[in-house]
Length: 433
Image (cartoon, rainbow, N blue to C red; front, side):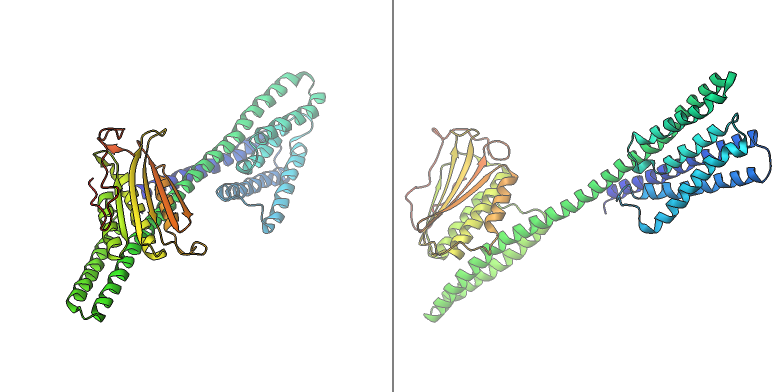
C-alpha cells in the first residue's frame, strides 16, 4: 500500500471514530435532561427510582441500536432474527417510560410531556442513520402535537407558557435528531468514497495485469511464430546437408529468445515502447523468413507519429503479421499506411491484406483481435476486419489529433506524401519514418 493510500485510510478511520463518539455523546443528553426534569418535578421514592432506572436502561439500549445503525451503513442489511426479541423489549421499555412519566410526575400539570418528548426523540435518533430523512424530525413534531392535544384542555391560564415551551423544546430535539441523521449521512458518504478508492485501486491492478498479459501475448505471439519459422527452416537446411546455414538460423533463434526475455522485463517494468517503424522492419523480416511475398506502402507525410499512436499501430502490425503466419497459408501480404485528411476528423489508417485464408469458420481460440480493438479504443480508434474470398483484410484507424496525429507533420498529403514503391515485391520495402 502506498504512503498516500495509507494516510487516507488512517484519516478515514479517524473520521469514523470521531463521528461514532460524537453521536454516542449526544445520546447522553437523554439521561441528563430526563434526570433534571424528573428530580425537579417528582417526589422521591421507589416510583421515581424505577423511572430513573428505566431511563438509564433505555439510554444504554439506544447506544446499542445506534451502534448497529452506524455499523450497517456501509453494508446495509435487514435486522437479523437474533436481534428482533431485543427490539421488542426496547419498544416495550420506551412505552413503559411514556406511560409511567405522567403517573410518577403528576397528572395533568407537570413536566411529564417533556420527558416523553426526550425519550421518543432519542429513541428515533438511535435508528436515524437508517431512516428516511423526513421521518427523523417528524417524530418529535408528531409527539409534541399529541402532547399538546392531551394537556391543552387541562392547562387553564398556563396554556401559553406550556405550549410555547413545548414548541421550543420540539424544535430543539428535532434539530438533535436531524443532526444524528446528517452525521450518519456524512459517514455514509465517507464510506462510499473509501469504497470507490478501494475499487479504483483494484481496477488499476486489473488494468496493469491486462496490459502485461496483452503485451506478453503480442510479444510472444510474434516471437513464437518467428521461432517456429526459423526452426523449420533450420531443420530443412540440416536435412539438405547445409549445416553451417542451419547453425546460423538456430543462432538467430537463440538471439530472438534472448531479446524476448529482455522484452518481458521491459513489459513488467512498464516501459514497453517499440515504435511503428521498428514493427514494420520486424514484420518485413518475419514475412520474408516465412516465404511470404510482401509489400509495404507508406503514404504518411514526413514526420513522426506521436509516441502513443506509434506504439498502438505498431502493436496492430505485430499482431496482424503474427496472425498471417499462424492462421493462413499466405503467399503475399500488403501493409499500407495513409492519412485520411478528407475525413472529419482526419485519421491515420493502417491496412493489412493477405491471401491464403484457410477455409472454414474463423478460429475462436485467440485473443489477438480483441487486444487490438482494446488498444485502438483506448486512443479513440477503430478496428475492422473481413474476409473477401480467400483474402483477409484488417483495417485500423486512429483519429488525427488527440493522440492520433503526426507530430510536426502537415495535415494534407499534397506535395508531402511519399510512397514506398507501391508495386515493390519480394522483401518488403524499407519503411522511411
